Length: 351
Image (cartoon, rainbow, N blue to C red; front, side):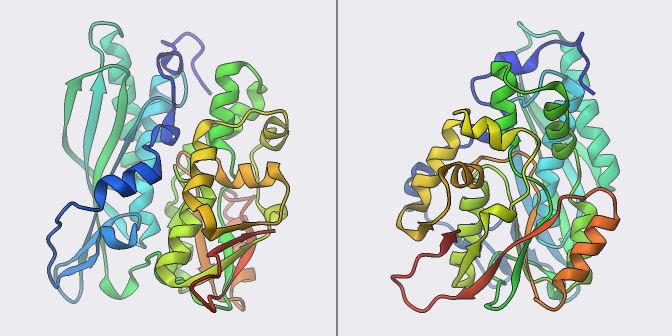
């Protein structure tokens, strides 16, 4: 639960969490002319817009490298720190890896916020790092306003067990492990539109490591997956579809949502990041569903779940085990992977 007597971090920011990500169209434009080097040991780089980079050390081990940081998503410092760390660690889990090392990335206005608040942020982050089994090796802190926190993470993975966003195959089904709606919940909290119970459900979801889901993902032989964060289900599903050369057919009625978020969207509580994510998909998105379902699918997630492409004959077993863990009760089959028959066929269909 949030500490009601703590400094109100959420009140210091305009955009919280992954909603603060740069517009993906602007980012795409900025990166297009940067001359990047590579070599034969690079297994995954920026070209496929995957969750992390992967560098092969030898036939038994590869390194996963990633980073993520953002402004506060809640008022409580410890909770914010934990959520930010869980979000950064998720990229390693999405690739089928194990977190190994972490560095704190901290931007904090030392003149306007008590230093004890920063200590609580770091404690929250360390709580998540400890749970992951990784080691904190240090970090970097600058004086900046508004506050921001996250991690640079190094993980490891066997090259043969690597999971990427290029591994989805026609005939597979799509499994989503966490409900959507964190962006809506954060915005609604700022506006006083969400109940304490519903907001707490969003905080609980954001604090949940994708560790167990990733373990089950590997047990069930999944090769294509991504985590759902700032570009929403639409944006990250589009990355999976593009890299895999497939079409994803998503049944929006099957998509799990956090409490009250569908109502909030219907009432007009839709963060700007959701509209940016829809624009980013452009003509590669076909929409056959209600506007509210489209905007839920576009909602920028902070510390969201894993989207996996699973063999159809194994999906029910995976879903049952996710439910039996007790930590993924809303995991659901939300669609299917189909063949992309021509360049003019959109990558994503929302039904």
